[in-house]
Length: 268
Image (tube, rainbow, N blue to C red; front, top):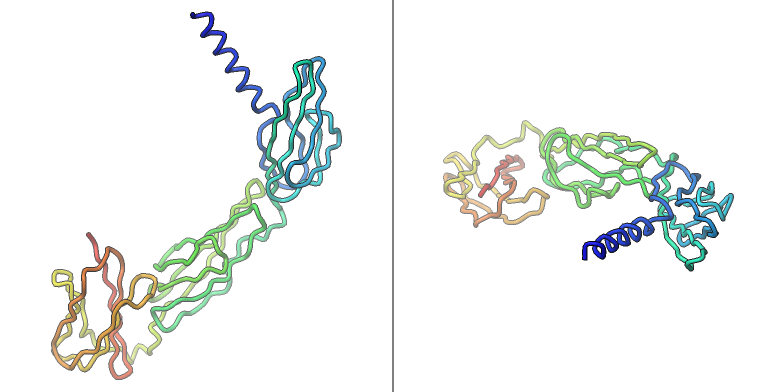
């Protein structure tokens, strides 16, 4: 029994080793490399062929043939062996990155009035298989798709929001660039309402001070989407809010052309 188990283990080990005889997958900068298939045994011959992409083999019967003319992205190449025991094939992927893919460019700084709202970003477009993504360095907000160079950026914080466009070009290197999005209320500071509106977490309500005039209130989520709105009479009062999921919210109060913005967080 032990001999049988040992034989099975040896056979499984040989099968596992034979399963990748075309060589390891490669990730290269450019379109030229050399194949890394296992050496041929006595009595065996082999040849390379293209399954996906493009390739020109300098020595198509050599396991270590130089290869040129690869396509950017994934190239799938197959190594087939003819031998006394029959025919077998194995495939290997060569991922080619373009050294001429543009460096990360986050685009020009922008200003976004009135708050809240959204704005289209203008990052550089990478050459596949390079990939880029947006992150927030400072400020707040949300992206429609953080991997889209032309993503929509929703509801930045009031003030300077610094965004970063990071590009990973594999073995050709990485690069980053930043852009500043200024989130402004859209009303001159001298036209701001006195601080007559506040959020009361215990009551889950917006509280209006006694000196408040008639006010229009709007509730937004962190992506700048309007959830609720209401008009209030002059004087003290409260706007009871429904149960809100955890997250960042903003109330915008407008009265006689002036504005106050209140940001608050709902936590479990």
